[in-house]
Image 1 (tube, rainbow, N blue to C red):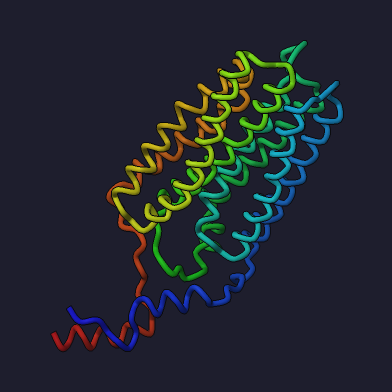
Image 2 (image 1 turned 180 degrees about the horizontal axis):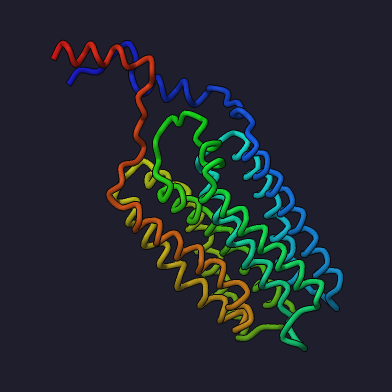
Length: 306
C-alpha cells in the first residue's frame, strides 16, 4: 500500500502538536458551567478552612489532608479551562475530580473523637459542596447545551469517553497513594507507630516504592491505552487491581481502621471506576483521525481511480 507523500499522517500530527489552540465560541451553557465550577472551588476552600480552624489540635495528619484538598482547587481551575476550550476530556476529568473531592472532604469533616457528626456549620458546608459537585457532573453528562459546547472543537483524534475516563482515573493513582503515605510517615515518626520501627520502615519503603512505580508505569502505559493497544489495557487493569488491594491494606496496617476509611476509600472508588471504564470501552475503536474537509476531494479521486 502506497503512502500519500503530499500529506502523510505524521506531518499532520506534527502540525497539530505545534498548533496554537484557541477557546471555542462562548456559549451560555459553557459560561454557566464555568461559573458553577468556580463556586465549587470556593466552596472547597471555605469548608476546609472552617474545618481546619475550628478543630482543636489539628495535627500533622489533618494538615496534610487539608493541604491536598486545597490543591484540588487547581484541578477545578484546569477543569474551567478545559470547558472554555471545549475539550471533550473535561467530562472524564470533571467526574473524577468531583467524586474524589466529595470523598476527600468527607474524610476530613468526620470528627476523630467525640460525637459522630461534625459541627452543624461544617455539615451544611459539606452538603452544599456535594450538591455543587453533583451539579457539575450532571451538566457535563446530561446537559444537551453543554454537550454542544464541548463538541464545538474539531477533535484531532477520536477517543471514546470511557477510554478517557480510564486514563484520568489511573493518572490519579500516584497522588492518591502519596497523600496517605505522607500521613503514615508522620504517624510513624510522631509516636503513633503500630509496629516495631524496623517493620514500620519496611512497610513505608514498600509503600513509597509502590507509589513511584505506579506513577512512572501508569504515565507511560495509559497513553498506549488511549492509542488502543490491548497489552496496555491489560497492564492498566492489573495495576488497578494491585492498588485496589494494596493501598487499603497499607492504610490499615499503619493508620488503622480510621485511616482505612479516610484514605483508602478515594482510591478504591477511583480504581473501581477505572476498571468499569476499561470494561465498557473494550473493543471500541480509539485514536481514529476524523476525515478533514481538505482531504475529502483527494479521497474521492482515489475512490474513482480504484
